[in-house]
Length: 349
Ligand SMILES: [Zn+2]
Image 1 (cartoon, rainbow, N blue to C red):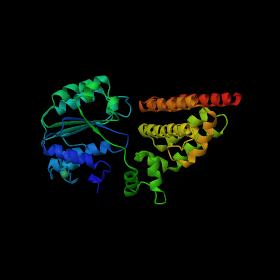
Image 2: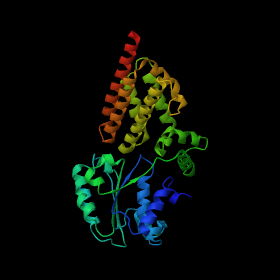
Image 3: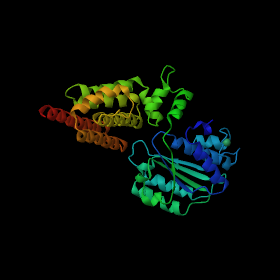
Image 4: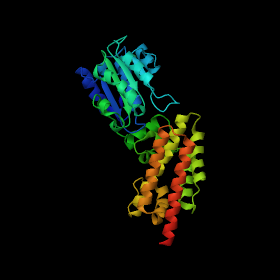
């Protein structure tokens, strides 16, 4: 059985147990790795393990039922502090970081540890990141600071150099398959293994691929871009915008949905490059093969690169809370322009 049903990171748990046993748990850690592999879930379970009243911290075996465990889950434990970016903000506000650091400098109220988990550390401004420096240099007694980000590159060097970097690997296809089945996330008729194979280590991607509305939107966009002869930017942008808006009322969920399909499209264009070179496309997505082949027939590798880059730019803009309809519309207009020009110049060659 994986640790607390969190798959894929048992080696990290063993390592943490050894560090706790030796009384060498770092005061500050930066958890990095791809999205939705369980970094935040792991950090919260870890905090629960340290604050459980039934089991010793070094066991890292939170019971889930004692007051300590329950308070961590409910975020009411006096020694557990969680900070995340507010829905309507582009960055973690410096005030909430200062408040967190103030609390972290105090002695733990109930036990040996006081743990802070900072989600969205990629969205720290320089000012907020600098607010951490004193806490990183002079940690309070028993304080443990966990920052969660995507890579060390997105953090200030001054922060990274004072943190122990803990790397989370993408989940294996076996783990994703097991998560989909164990948690009842997909209908029984769905082929979990096939989804897991295409998910590139992310449960969120596997779930999107299992969703008919997502699949339809993705096919429509690829059809419009590749097969329509002259792609219409407003139509392409609208399909993605509608997909995002239908997924949830929450802007954060809508953004994630739009990002997922843009990531998928950048993978599609990667397939186009491989197809153009006469190689089997790396995504292994057979539904794409024909379209990738068609586009490779007229689109130069430079143009394909430019489109893939444009997808990445749109992803970054939406991640950083750009106005989603505007970002999508500018993206679609650039991609359609490149494709239409590429097609026209192929005709004159
Ligand atoms: Zn407990």
